[in-house]
Length: 297
Image (cartoon, rainbow, N blue to C red):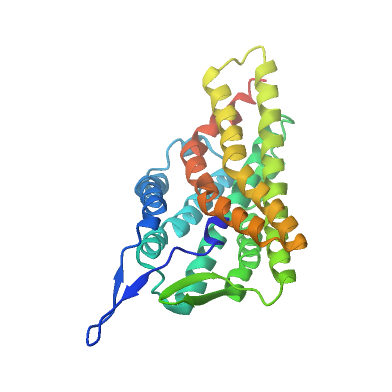
């Protein structure tokens, strides 16, 4: 998420008298551009396939199907913006202030929706398998998805408020600009709380799922065990650097330590937490097998 919270690598526009300016390639943006290109090439067709083919969806409840569809759509909302970010890493931000605000807002809305959707899916699996309760399945999808997307849109509003264009000589950036440090602290704190609470719920749910299936006498499926383990480990590996960097950032803001704050921005820039949902959408349909084991426990 905070990958887009850092200053974008920007363009060096060189021009001679009488010539129109042309953006020059910035080699510093090659690595993130390649990483994003790989994510786009793998994630975009993968999510399209999930929406069209709906693999293993026949065994899912209507609520699970709606949540999986929401997850795929939210991922696509983020993925379709990647070509623009790839270009901005290589040639700088050329999409004006409106584009800066709206595109970043779409990214944050996508990431929050994906995170909250995965959290709800985890709770649903936890209740169904560990406590053998299907009460959440009886909830109408609209009653759950509408407040989920609404919450994501509200949480994403700082992108519309604080995103600005700034120029350093001939370099243009799309980044957050704050009037005072209290605003920055509030934004980082809200992101940290949402991420920490969601991650805690997800990890708690899947750890208990693992314990439940591992104790089942009639259920011993190594594939399910590996799946639960991989989901938990992936979430921790991808989100932990983001959460830790946010905590350090809040300390740096309080101490007014610009060097430490710059270091944290570097960690955020290299963090791939926005791709968490892209990984989970691939494994997501398979986790319905965990639901089915509840019938045997």
